[in-house]
Image (cartoon, rainbow, N blue to C red; front, side):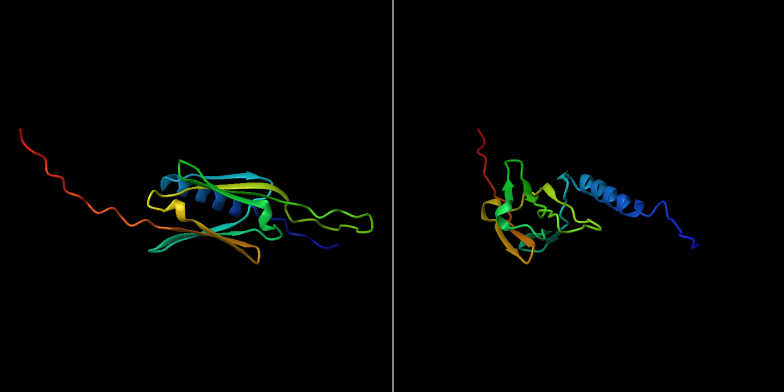
Length: 146
């Protein structure tokens, strides 16, 4: 008989990492929302000209994905990943992939041109590019004295 070593804390690392991400988002003034059975992983980059969001959506056709930005500058990515139909001639030994609807939302900074957003879908990766607005130049207004 062989001995199997069990680590009862093996999943705590990822749970603490996700909790830390949520706390960092709150400290930065943004809030992140996740809803659904399936939660795609997202990378967000920020450079001098754009904020770019890369979302992994393997196995999801672009017709099943919806992207919106509301008045409060919250960008939402919603969709659904459908399970392939189970057939009687297949014997599933293990099912690890997640399916179902999902929603990811991010509070965007105010310096973005949300009326000029571009989205592309390639090889299961959704890329959303949001350009930055030119900063407003300080203006001087002369006030007359009565």
